[in-house]
Length: 225
Image 1 (cartoon, one colour):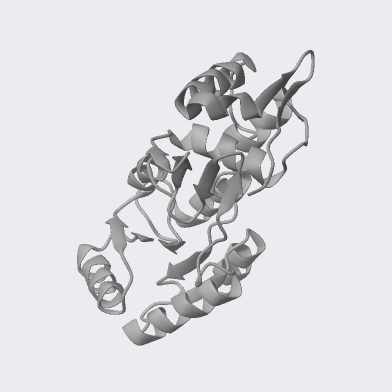
Image 2 (tube, helix red, strand yellow):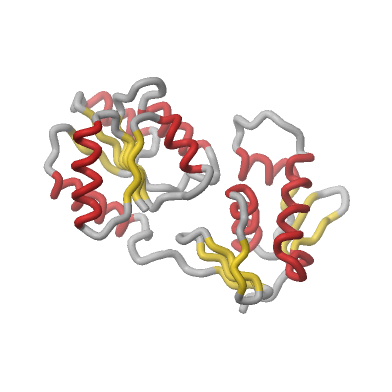
């Protein structure tokens, strides 16, 4: 899935049509608010992000994407009608993976998308994580428990993936809050406990893989399959 954030409906539809004709699934948004709502439900393989947007501009959106652990690794290609060196430098400094200056050709866009996906290692898919009867697909955002699919919220999924990527590592509640909710989250560590409890419940018997380390936090204890 590729997300397009472009306020011009005509350009957005043309970009979407071209990408779908090239074999990519797409979703288009006219502003940042709609993008953030979509990210709560599904993570894309790449985001095409216009700089000049109503409300929150593209550079601000990019900065927030890179500051959150759940979205920091998503490849981002910036697009702007300005075409100035300043915007390009700022965008790249903030973590953009590539840059398109309007007007750009649709085939150039497809070529840049494919190149960034190859470079970032997302073109061929992401390795499955299989531990303790749990199989996680980071790309598809799916989880199988004893070969049966379970439905997790975004935060539950990110918690489980973080644990599975570092089995045996003890995470404090503060670390989990920072990595999953981000530095700008205002709330208590109790939020982590609540999400861990619901995650364990959804994992059934495999929920015991998430071990409580009293006075410290949590760790994932399971044998890799």
